[in-house]
Image 1 (cartoon, rainbow, N blue to C red):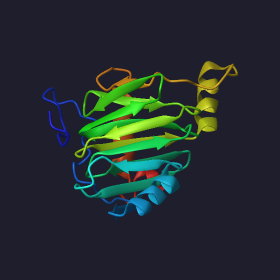
Image 2 (cartoon, rainbow, N blue to C red; image 1 turned 90 degrees about the vertical axis):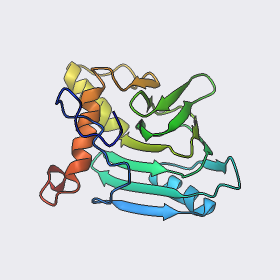
Image 3 (cartoon, rainbow, N blue to C red; image 1 turned 30 degrees about the vertical axis):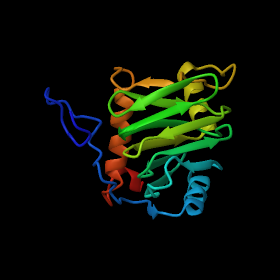
Image 4 (cartoon, rainbow, N blue to C red; image 1 turned 135 degrees about the vertical axis):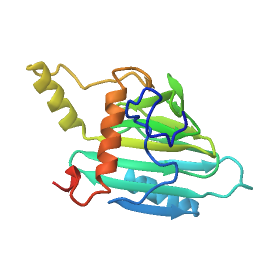
Length: 201
């Protein structure tokens, strides 16, 4: 099944109904070719980080779309060339879901090879991160405020948490427990295109 398919052969709606080309729903879309501007965009959208282009003969062609909702920020990101990113410990929970290409992501102690329709990554706060992007890699990310996510889990358990939530880094995108999350993110993204959609409230 290609990343642009909207249904599976079973007729079940697919979470991969995100267009291959970055659409411009409510939010901000930037196309950037300058490395310093790219670092500035990463800093504003995620947090400070370092960007290195693997092959200077292949110029940067970054596309970044971002939409901020209460407690949640959705982003699409691609660089158009092989890049390496290093970042300090994350301040938020971040889900990384490749729509195309490959992304090696992790820390010195653990890492995962993320790829479209196979594996994603769930990054917990407090962990430094490195990322190696393939030139064709396009990633959907969702950033969650720690206090809201932890309050929600505490309410579900009906008891206070004994510590911060820590996710396993690797996220199998075919896991039955993961696919509803992907469908929910796709729903939110699609509703951003509708002036009367749920995200308008």
